[in-house]
Length: 136
Image (cartoon, rainbow, N blue to C red):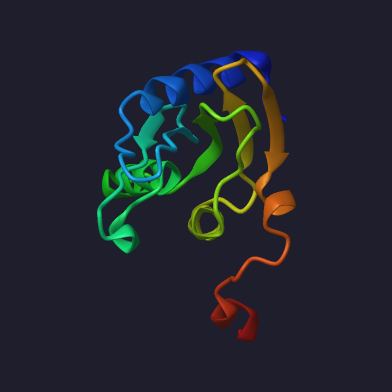
């Protein structure tokens, strides 16, 4: 479990990233803040496209930004929306997060101040993994 200081740091960064979302089609803005093992926060927002399959979620934006900068070890992610209910990452984002951080702490927040914390394994109990490793 994350301490309150880290939760607040990620919550604030995710809510800030939320303001940059480009969601003209769904109207569902999302911000994410990913904490790496060195303590640096990588943020992302969802970016929609008229061809919906080309849209990218906030969580994947954050992790792809971090990975493109050479970061491969992560501790936590916060996901912020304006929805009245807390919103977990979609299945595609869960799978991408699983690739890099199967023990990731996932903090869900909204603008009302609601917060909940999970382990990624709780949200993705049967994740697809690299089966080549199991064959060795």
